[in-house]
Length: 274
Image (cartoon, helix red, strand yellow):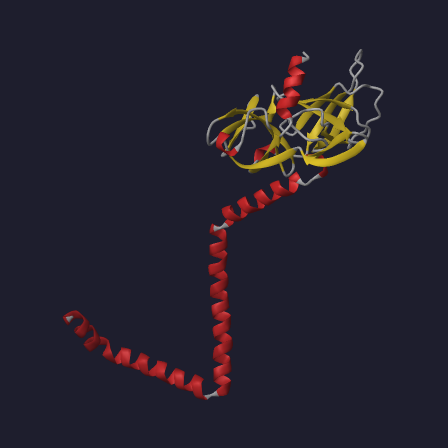
């Protein structure tokens, strides 16, 4: 208390001057229309700038929440695409009934670990069995295919990247429907090889390569990339085709794990027929 008293005693004239300046400022603004308008306009500009900065900071810390919300919305919209449904057709007592049934749904995940420089690259997502993730599910993002789920725990899952020599994807040419197997040879992370396209197929550089729909893991017509170059090796009856990926797998962030409700039935009957 004594220190506070000494402070006012020492600097009291300064505090009195500032107080009187403040009172004068209030009187001038209150009783002079021009000054009042100038004050209000200036106050609005300053407060607007402050609120804008505060809002920018607040939005920055909410980016993860916004990104999660957008990813979930994208998953919902993907389910509505034409290649996420199938036609359930029944013919009972000469009554024809055709219903459109959703075959694919999408589970949003965030990539928390990823590699692209190994021979067999993998990535980890922050969703697991408690979220409905199972082994052998396909994984995509907004730019195309990312890989296939291999190992699943309660809260996390590991996927085999397209940049993995163990992965082969059934792919086709959008232009003419010719299909083959897409695989990575371990050199360029942006180039994959499309095999088994017969040499009589009409192809050209720039043709779009998409999923064929013959795999239980991916719907048809998902964009994979475009033909970068192709040739025929002497003595071979099929093309050697290099496909430039549409997806940059070094920048995986949010992904969508594909839940095919018919996958178990399809895999069961295919395994029995082998």
